[in-house]
Image (cartoon, rainbow, N blue to C red; front, side, top):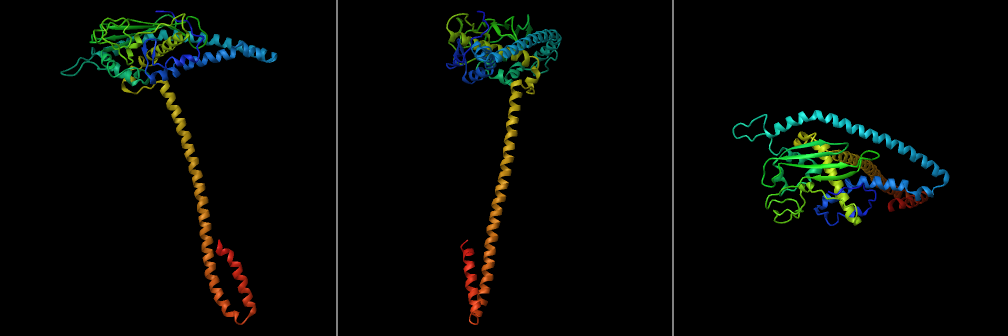
Length: 384
């Protein structure tokens, strides 16, 4: 396995590596490629690009001397803060490793319940809790999407336990235990994840990932890359969860695009491993029952609630606007109705007046003049 040096020259070309859906010999479904490209590598790319922009000599040198001095002072303060943050993360890591030892007896009891050692089956009842780990993994949104329904589910039904082994510093290993099965002869598959020793900030960069070779049985190959397996009849064109045990080495030299593709896959493997270590294994029963939720899922729910709140506000505002419009329309309608009613009333009244005036016109010239004036004043009202 080649050692991966910390990627400090990552460029937007990293995203183009998923265009072919097959990266470094691994099959990468489009929905998974797009999600992992943004979620897994996005923060890494953003943090590095931001660092490059701020610390770029061309940017700092372009500032006026008085600003350049002040920015340099701020950078020195930021560096001191990073030193403190790094120390904090190392102490947290050591504390987690100490307390994780207290979890092991509980995990052992959990394992015994799952496989049926503590509660033997009676009659035709199956022992333990069948498909416990498969169900928990499928209920996790980020892990479940890596499990295909064809072969992965059938193979993962033989999974009996997942262990986390904390190594030096931030390094750790995942051990997947299986009962004898039709797919491979391994009873345990181990994957180890190593980080850079030196780092500054929240956590070190991934260094390398190693995993046990899967001894596939004839015709049972699930991964796309046969890896020289003579028992494989043909390559599986679809992605498989078991690609996780075939980490792609990142070449130290060579084509830049190949290195960036390897870096992307490495980050994806580490992200998946961290989900097992931090979310699935510690709270496996909650993932099995469906009561658990990932951090990303909780953030998405919060965003959805915020969006729903904004939509409700918009609807309320729209309702108010509609109410105002309706009120205006009703006012206008009432005004028109009142005008028409008034016109009709005036017309009826005027008709009566006209009749009376008509009787008087014969006896008085003054009455005739008032009648003509009134009719002239009524003309605009009738045209409205």
